Image (cartoon, rainbow, N blue to C red; front, side):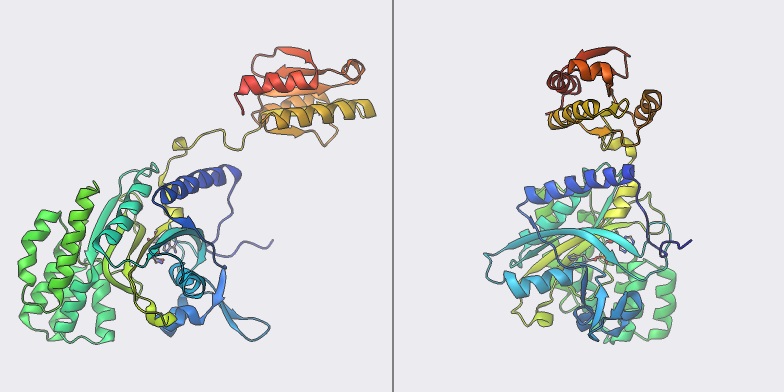
Length: 431
Ligand code: HAM
């Protein structure tokens, strides 16, 4: 038997009902902030991603040559595709442009708990405003949208990539050194950082501040107390001022609790300003359920720089955290089974009338298509959790009425198709 590819999943109906429910909540929250949904292709030119990140990205990307020899990939994320779309077709839209998206993305990573090769992201991008309020809005939206899903405790960490970049500049670190040291900071790997610093030959001040960044995570007050230590680092103060102003704006918006963490540097290359991540203490190693911040991709698309800020949520991880009990139980269940008895044409005609009338009254209706007898049909209706069965035999056909059986109480009535539909509608309370 052919198995599904590693790192992919099949979803049963109950799981999908849950995912749809959660997705609708995220959509509704994004729309309540004025964001509108866009959709981009699942495949893109590989160049779109290589242009910014370089060939390093190839080993994490599913890509192939199509029959025309073009290098095509399955999108590994949705910010670059959305900005590509923006550059091509949204440039004349009134600013700021607020869009959201959701859909599958693919990354060639080593699968483990909460880490897949095919997974889903829900995200937003706000284009055209380089401002404190734009940064704060996007963080507030991510915080609110994830907080109300029922995913349990979540930790919001906010930082600014400008701080570690300023330290790296002050130390004269090249790209390779940054690629080594940033992940150590991101992981708060104090031991690894010490080992690296021992051989790096940086000045005492920079080394001390890098250690401070790696070791610090605290509330806005603790952050304000720490700030003066960075006063001597050129370019850091601008980043710290912006971060401080965004923290004030977040407080005004009631976003709490949050931790300031200047070691949040994010893996992607395009971030330039305030960045944030949302983590769950209940997810194990892959605890990050979402992240984002302000970034600049203007050079990739030959545009003038204008503020861009957004986030991507790991939809699968959030869905894992939400208990099934937080989702309406009956999504996708069956209300009524219509069970004709025998194959006389009058029986089939009456069953069809009843089926349509009850379905159009708003109920979820299945009709037996296996020619089973009433006993087996009632068993099936029970197994599917149906509330009613409609039995149509020769006796019913002769009277033009159907037997409506309430499967909970066992009571049954002989009713016209229209009356059966009205009764089902009122008992189920469907629209
Ligand atoms: P990202 O951090 O690479 O950011 O991905 C966003 C989220 O996707 C992560 O926080 C994580 O929850 C989830 N995720 C990442 N890899 C996997 C995986 N292998 N399996 C399951 N979930 C995963 C971005 O993609 C940016 N485009 C976000 C953004 C939007 N920044 C600005 N705008």
